[in-house]
Length: 393
Ligand SMILES: Cc1cc2nc3c(=O)[nH]c(=O)nc-3n(C[C@H](O)[C@H](O)[C@H](O)COP(=O)(O)OP(=O)(O)OC[C@H]3O[C@@H](n4cnc5c(N)ncnc54)[C@H](O)[C@@H]3O)c2cc1C
Image (cartoon, rainbow, N blue to C red):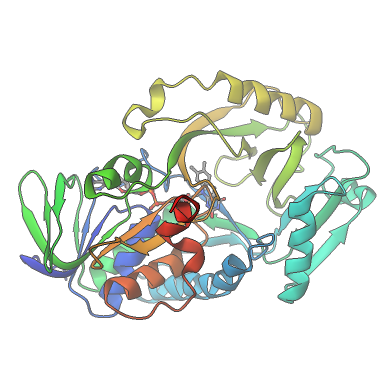
């Protein structure tokens, strides 16, 4: 049961998927934990809303993510089981484990080539398809004959909203305190960290800042200037004109770098809206998260419509549903998971660069270790803040 108090072991600020997973791990291991969120929950202003995300083990040349993905799959299953037992409903977080993730591109595409190598190295089950086989299995896609296709068979769709709710519900069940609709106004570091909201001052032995796109505006106020770029992502759902080739029993999740020059495009089978497949550009205009809707995204719409017309000829030319979400990118597309350079009991989680959902179960575990003085289970070198400044020093 929820029990409010003045002093917490850890305060987690931000109840997106990263903060919620962190708070869950902390409460589960017996820490008195406060999870603070600026908006009433659930909300759709950050990066973790919506019903679906791609999960997969393939991670190009970045083996440190593939290593973490093995544990992420296990932790997700553990969360599913806990919910099934304790909530008296079985939350199926994986819609389908077997639709797979198709990574493809031109013969010289580095990401496709390194994905194949990585899957071999980690002995993950995969298939290599040629163009003829791709067309036979996925007739809704039309790409040049010389493209390479790698199907990561572990890939699939995560039910994103269910997973977020499950972490938050389990956090409260483990005794965590969840306060939503309560923005952190400022943070006073020290041996005990104080977090001030409009009505309260909360104190914690440590704090985890998981602010999503708002990290870009808040972190400079505590002396951390990471190059973070919040981008508006336009999420489009397209209807097939006649046949049914995009359901999850017939169509995989996919990622390609070569659909528009070197631009990246991803897609998920029709799941959340009946008969509508989700296909989006992996980029968008830079924004201030508080003025997300004011920015012009016409170039994104023009590009994605061009891709649909050329490469997905059975889909209607206009999306039936358009939604918005935010990426927070770093220059190398790797996360920031580190201690504040001066105050070690302030832990920073930022820059999830459009691929942080599938890793959230393990990211939350690692952040909970960092916030409680334990050695993280993984080598944290790729996630350090000082990587951005090394060449300048
Ligand atoms: C369209 C789209 C598709 C994606 N697809 C995939 C995918 O297929 N696979 C994948 O792995 N990842 C994917 N991602 C990325 C993934 O969703 C994000 O990396 C992840 O959701 C980031 O979560 P977060 O907790 O860091 O941020 P957020 O969800 O934005 O959470 C941060 C929270 O902090 C709160 N907050 C901020 N400031 C304060 C404050 N001062 N006080 C209190 N609360 C505060 C915010 O309100 C927010 O709720 C996708 C993202 C988008 C946008």
